[in-house]
Length: 448
Image (cartoon, rainbow, N blue to C red; front, side, top):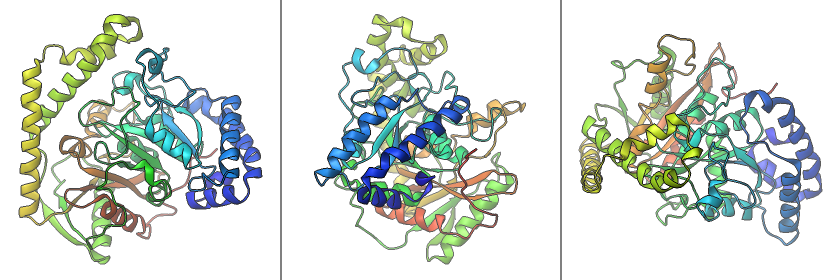
């Protein structure tokens, strides 16, 4: 199918031949209709909506604009406001209207660059990961599919969208991306606008991207520069090859193939000129406790007025999670928030003393957690063990698919930029992705 190619090729072809987009999207819409009934990655997309998007793109291209991401199919997590679509966040209510949320500047930037918003992508209620998302893993119904941006990861892996815009408050972009065998970027909070979102103000949550490869994510940022809001995110800046620390994971419950992929990726980066060193650097339990205290308080502050006025919206299990911050006093949250800045400073001081610019860790400890496994709950909880470092200390972080083993499992690694700029993180992710696979075809879309 046309949309299986690299992002740059899709955009360049669409800009030259905009008259072909309607036929391409008609076939894509048919494909979604045939296969997404089982996967449930999208929130009931309609042809009427797609026709409106195609008309908008045609007018944009005719006026000389929209060539950066011309015709690229993009899905948006259903906690992010898209003008003209309801924002239900896993409920049956239009929370965008109830909360009077503005349109997402990130969505507007993508639309102005020529992207086609295929529709909203499924998530857990309020993106909390507390209740079920009902989205099926691309590996099958019996497998764990990941966190709250799960609809985006599955839609990209299935070929329904080429890019997903999601949010990551504890690995929710990178974890499902790794489990679906695609790439996921969680930049620092505010790098991509958090406005126009349900829960967008919660500590540690950041807007991120999912795509088939690190190269495709780099192309989104290059071809849609207005997506990045922070002046520090100059993608042209470079500092040369960084020093990358690889923590000892032998004491953790990690799949042997995952550990082998981590070692192989570190070896490849060393060949590419990076300095690879062992490190014991890790988050502290005190920092983790303060992080969850602040997140619980922020969640409660956001949901308290909504729960008073619209308690019927909430699933009981989700309501319990949101009420976890009810007993936290504002001064306790303020103190924990301040301590988190100190935790971050100490972490960075420790990294500097070891000369570290980045960390290289597994994306998930087990690439195929089985729901029927006796240890499934433990494994699914551990899946965020590595990624949460980026949320606690607010680092740019990239999950990169490396290879597919003989059983079909995709093995990924994660990079965390401690002092390196986003441009250096992207460059390093591309180098990780360039490693020749030791098994056939590291990325094969889960089509048919």
